[in-house]
Length: 102
Image (cartoon, rainbow, N blue to C red; front, side):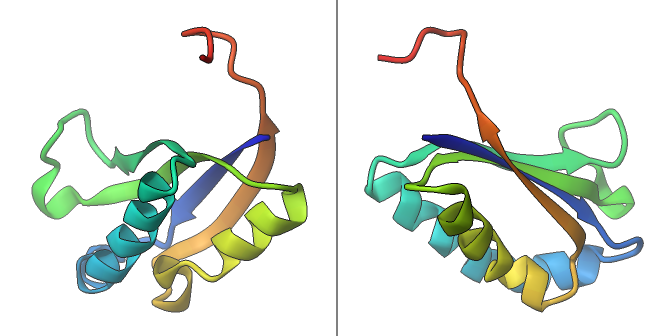
């Protein structure tokens, strides 16, 4: 099943985000290689693809997991959690409607 992982950043955490980003991306690449990642990316804090020093307000990941418990466990061990980038993480089941899943 698909799960949406919706994270909100701690204020002024851009420096921590940049430091933990390589580890964070490696975990996402592992999901992608396994064919489990649907999409992932940050929410810019301003209306720009390159927010510069304004940084980001959080992230969204949609991926396949066996259960809600597995998705929560995976999200809870994200390097952004360990680094204090995320102040909270919400994991919810997600039903893709469009585009129609293959």
